[in-house]
Picture 1 (tube, protein in one colour):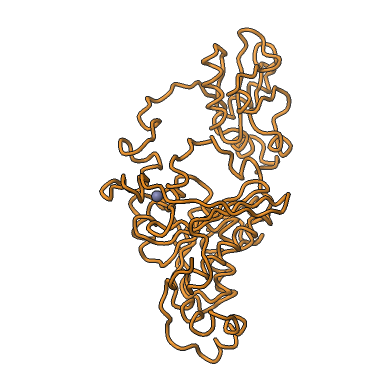
Picture 2 (cartoon, protein in one colour):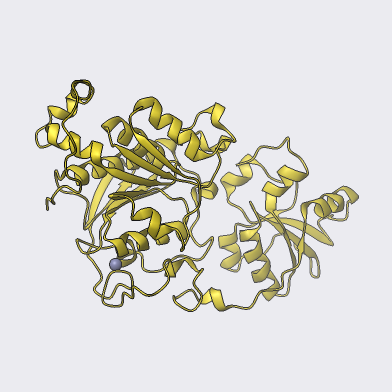
Length: 399
Ligand SMILES: [Zn+2]
């Protein structure tokens, strides 16, 4: 269903703008009127990463007048495989600054607003309220739920995308017009329940496919052309090269936009930061006492020969592809999913101690808890292989 344009047209285009945007002016239903709407538009892009990068470039090229960029991260070498607004010379810079430079290189007249922060309950509503439309390419669930919640509460259309390995999803959430994010994904997964691109990998060009759909949807909504992805979830399988559109409908009982909505509750009920107001059972759990060792101590133990595979051994609970990048020598390997399923640790002698590591210490922490519940003397390696690379052997690759 077509919808009215989100943005009224601004002043007449200058002759220079008529030249620059000539291919838009030729398009039926866009024309000068649509281009003036784009120039008057204010669009917020959450995450200057894999999805935000192509979206930012196409929004800038399309002549969107004001683009806000939210990111609290700095450019890392591992980002360059897909985050095409950043170049090799940008490693170590704030992603917002790097993204702003890329936008301004394409469109010097675009106003770029850098929000170099992670949105939280206190800031999200105020930031989102300043924009006509939000593109959400966040790489973490707390931010996605927070942005979805803020957009739904403000009635701002929320162009959302997600990618993992060779797959992508994209939709437009819009409370009042169709489902909001929480209508379709009512429960935030616990940390590490769903693997991230940092763990499972992602084909860089899949980000371009999904990010460009997000930019297309933004232009359609701003100018009021076509049928936006409201009420449809587009599911992309790059290996089969298929796109399936699944119908999705608003949940009348949705706690964000439906009958159970409560505007007085703190924003971000699903983020786990608002104890007592959501379904985040873990927020009330007592702290778990979990034996741990830091990488310096582990290094000394390995050097002393104490971790001999009999009285104690190393256990890697990461995925196979992660081990191919970097791993500590020796030890056993059982992915955390197999630990959850009850798989034994190969070579583990009765009474032996297990030093468990993963990428950064979170999955290994879960594995330690599971193993200890089975009576195994398991100890978590704080900070995981990333801490090892940073503090013990910086010559090793990272990811
Ligand atoms: Zn909803």
